[in-house]
Length: 107
Image (tube, rainbow, N blue to C red; front, side, top):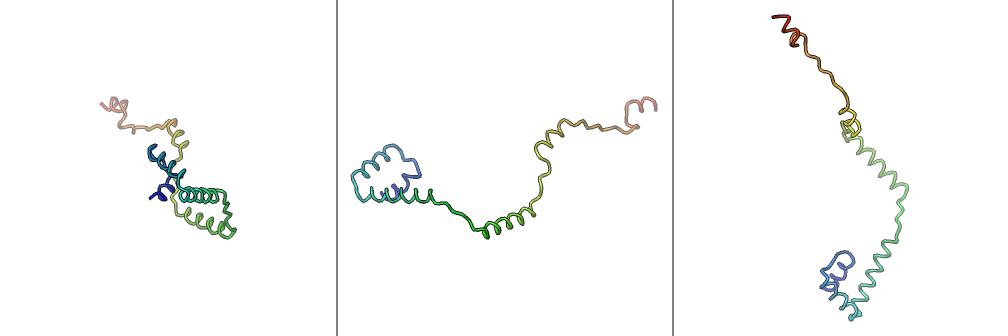
């Protein structure tokens, strides 16, 4: 139970009462203090580790990405295209037979 709470202490927020109890216990218990120190060292080591992928792995990932992108439908309109379209004046001419002037002449 305490070991699980120690693991969580580095990644989650405890209610203040639980956090205080944990700190008191760690101050008093050598085994838990050592376990917490090992865990902190492990996380510090993981944070410091730099993983450099091989050239082959990079090439393979890039090839897979290119292949997947070929099957993605392009966006229909981009943001600026939509904005520009909003400022475009579109003329819709009515056929001559439907215009008000044409009706008055035909009457």
